[in-house]
Length: 127
Image 1 (tube, helix red, strand yellow):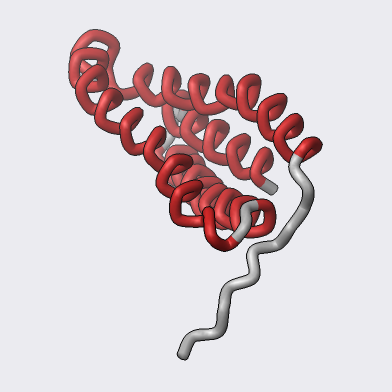
Image 2 (cartoon, one colour):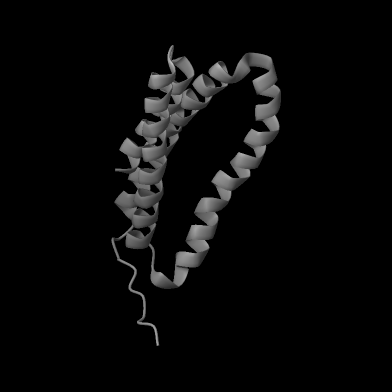
């Protein structure tokens, strides 16, 4: 599900950039938005299923630190890139970049899930 979500996000962003009509751009944005939502659910589920309960906070903090740091860098570089290549090509570059992350994520995640024992996090009942 995680890989499909990243593909949907990348293809949706790419489709938005290359679309010749507003209707296609809207479909691309809907696909990208659905992919982003699926990504969050799939990533959070993988973490919760594979990380001991006492380490969940640390792992969530570590995992989500990188996207937020990358977002800051993207805002800084994105303004210059937007001025240089325009919004359409910036969306194309973004879509290709999203799809390219699969080349890194698939081997790393496959290796990590292959080594780690599957111990679901069991949270203590509140109260």
